[in-house]
Image 1 (cartoon, rainbow, N blue to C red):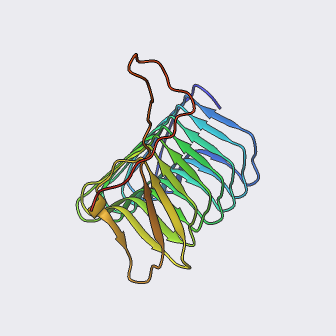
Image 2: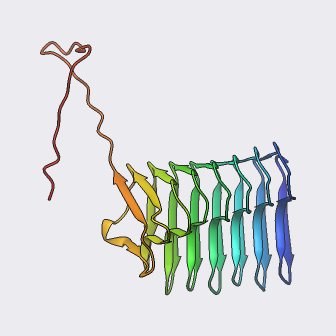
Length: 239
């Protein structure tokens, strides 16, 4: 599905592109997708249950409606899909607007190099992960702009071993990262830009968010020649 201009409007439950259950190895590339409605439940791209190996790339996805709007949904058990280099904008006049929503047991997906923004009133989410594991997020720019509550990254249920690498994560109103996982789950932020004071855990959560930063070191001699097999040691003196 490539190079299409797709515009959908109606009274609710609108879909730009849907791949039904068990749809595998499809390409959704370089489309302009917009859904515009006066009511709720609008979807840009929907990967239905157990769909795998699909590529969603270089699309412009724009949602303009009231509430319960989704730029991209990866439905339950839809795994090993790649969502890359898309511009996703989800705008609602009310709440519950999602950039990317990953539902339960949707594992091993790659989400990279996307620009994701949401705008609404409350409970807006850049990326929402519901009980899904081993997903890789890299080089994404995630911004939420709500008037009351918003979360750039939201981890829920049994979500674990999801890694966010080299990304910009920013919620304008509430928390950059919100963890409501249970069962001692661990997720990671690696070399990403966010406000450390904007990581929040619910009262019931016993999850962990590990934060890592990489340091690249180049070793040279006094003549600027590379030193081969050098041993470099370092320490963290931060408090």
